[in-house]
Length: 121
Image 1 (tube, rainbow, N blue to C red):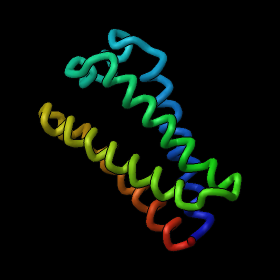
Image 2: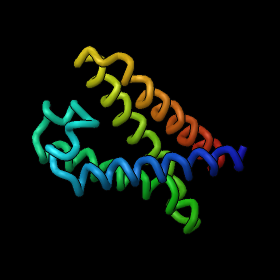
Image 3: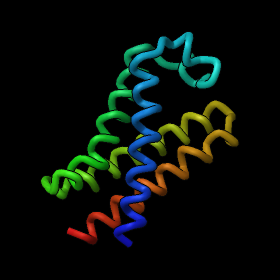
């Protein structure tokens, strides 16, 4: 299971780093064509989401790589899962049910990491 956990952690880290960095560095106007939901939120909220994604990505990988703070990886995974469930809810509330699949899948993968790393400690 360790190999599967590492694989999922790496994939999630890359995805959340990319998504979070994009939200931190691009303007609302630049994000809007591919992320219509940004129109419903302030720049500050969008940046906070991006920051949470980047910090969560770091928390998914760094504690295990540095062999320290073993509790941080499952915590980061749970936080990212909650964030993704919020994203799914946002899509559903905007009548974009088809777009809710990706954040739900990411939440499930993050939940897998949280569970797997909790059981390993």
